[in-house]
Image 1 (cartoon, rainbow, N blue to C red):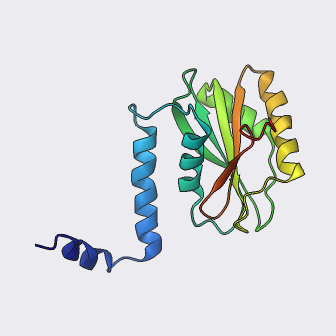
Image 2: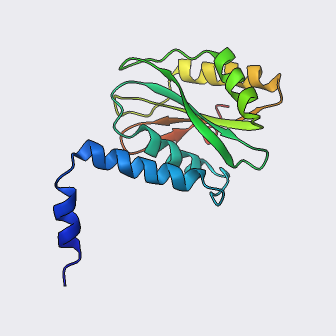
Image 3: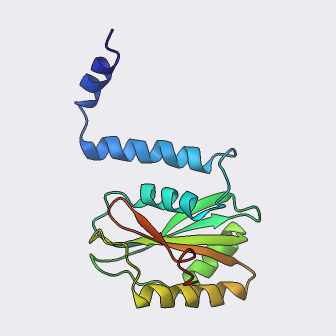
Length: 160
């Protein structure tokens, strides 16, 4: 018996975008559940943000707000930009951390070009955020740059 056939015929009724939106919702629920694994490794953080950024046509800067055990409190899309830039305002990130009572964050943005290589500006804003958040005892654990199907961790590269 081919169990795959009924599922495929059901899915044919929906657009690829609708299917991806539903998949993102399911994954997001799994990642934000109480049983979700802590953000303990760059690979875990990369996986999370690759899912969040899949299919975006313009830059978006997101943060994952974490508790003191690095478990996800919530994620927020903080800033939306153009095809090649997004302005990041540290004051707004500080406010989000205070509102969520976060102990740490991981931040990320996508490169719609598909190339996840960090720019000098990416490294500079990471250092600026790290300094601003240190004033309120919030650690920046990583900044992930996502591209087409892969991601780069600034922490792994020693750029934090």
